[in-house]
Image (tube, rainbow, N blue to C red; front, side, top):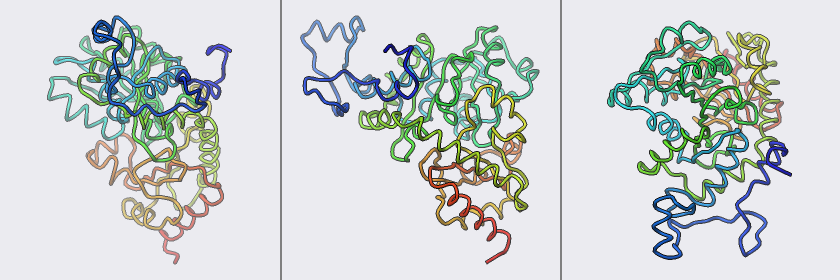
Amino acid sequence: MSDEQAHFETLAIRTQTPVSAEREHSVPLYLTSSFRFDDAEHARALFTEEVAGNVYSRYANPNTDEFVRKLCLLEGGEDGIATASGMSAVFTAIAARVSSGDHVLASRALFGSTHQIFTRILPKWGVSSDYADAADPSSWERLVRPSTKLIFIETPSNPGLELVDLRWLGDFAAARGIPLVVDNCFATPYLQRPLALGANVVTHSATKYIDGQGRALGGAIIGDASYIADCRFFARHTGPAMSAFNAWLLSKSLETLAVRMDRHCSNALALAQHFEQHPALTAVRYPFLPSHPQHELARAQMSQGGGIVVLELMGGLDAGRRFLDAVQMVSHSANLGDTRTIVTHPASTTHSRLTPAERAAVGITDGLIRVSVGLEHIGDIIADLEQALTRVNGAP
């Protein structure tokens, strides 16, 4: 069976590093910092890239190669690299392609650390940026410049679950010869394939759903070969390399991604439906709820709604803090995409460095709670959140 014929689940399981002389069934760990050369000529040819092969694990390793090859097949990308974290993937994908005087156009709703790259780090290099509104095509038309070298978005956004029309923006970028980079962390390639809808590159925080159990940090950049070549050069000489152990672990985790995402999505939809009319909440956001303002777009470019639900509590910041202190089974952590359900208060943690006005612009209210819905029994998840809401509203 060819890669083109195989289904997602089969590619995630059966894409493996070639079997060694030991005839192992499960791919071994290649815990080595460097690799031996056959002779002096072989060493020279490897360093000039006249021949393919491993030199140094900061450049490549059989474990990272397997992980990247899987993601390329699952995303439909030509090439890719693995990085030490999701943010190193985001930074590398941006920094590898911009120079002083360049401009980046991005969606307004971004993860807090990505916002810091655009507002605090890139300006030191003379790189400017603007934020467009995801649902307003005229804002993209108005803000794009001749010096725009990159368009960067995340969809669905973290944490507000705002969507960007990938097909429209892909056409917009292509018509102007500007590469489109999409952070596909929340959806994963199982639910959404941006490259098939017009994007040039996707980034991942493999720490989240790809790992799925809160064990390891990792990131990846997948996409057009020419773009990845620039990212590989930048990463090779700046060092954000994924360890062989993490690559081995994350590649193994991809084998169960489809099964886990199905359960994350079914649990999340059930939770969103249960709480949608709750009197202690001002809003519940989930892309596959008909009440989501971009529900039709979600159904057009995602196969399911994902594992994140947003709850907006009445009572603002104080209610949010009391809710976090009231959960019992559910975890209070900054991570997401875990087997365990996690609640996070973005206004005081992940997006705390944004000004109140910046948070308001992307829909992050003081009472917003991000729920990363896990794989526990949905009845137990709902029961814990219900009792926490009851305690927030004054019951013992």
